[in-house]
Image: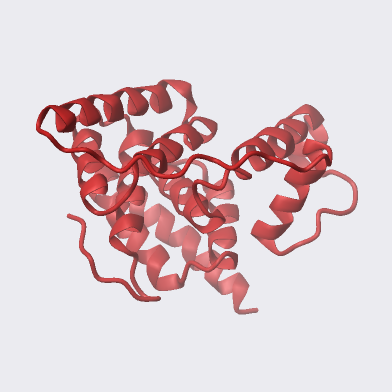
Length: 222
């Protein structure tokens, strides 16, 4: 159920819709996704905003889930058009005018998300698989995150919801919960996000996400 209350302690109706769309896309639950896509449009999301959520999600839950979601959105739009409902398409992504290398642009965007400089030698997976670091910087954080259909805050909302729903990806979830806080999502909003995802994926995965959030919040207070 999408509610319309909004404050710095609760998600807006549009944010709630993005959360649930992301959760059900990651889970692959197309009947519920169909319902939530329609509810999202009714809550004020544009066609391009919903499409952008589904496009971004391929980077986190793969093309099969993403394309299934896009096909479901197309079905929803056709059904609504047949009923005489004409949904707002919304703005398309602005052209990228920067001539800086994509790797540098992605690195800068990542620094905006985390508030931390990307300096020093590569470590962990990025050191073991430097090509993955390139793909992440150039494609995810440049090609995708630079598209201004969604804000960074909205993109982190979508990402966290997908990771909660996927489960078993605690290190990545921890990173993105921290990024979500940095770009302006509040503790209360993140708790609400997890609660919404619980409807889609059940209590065990939601409780696992709450444990990760507790760790992120404890680190932020140090």
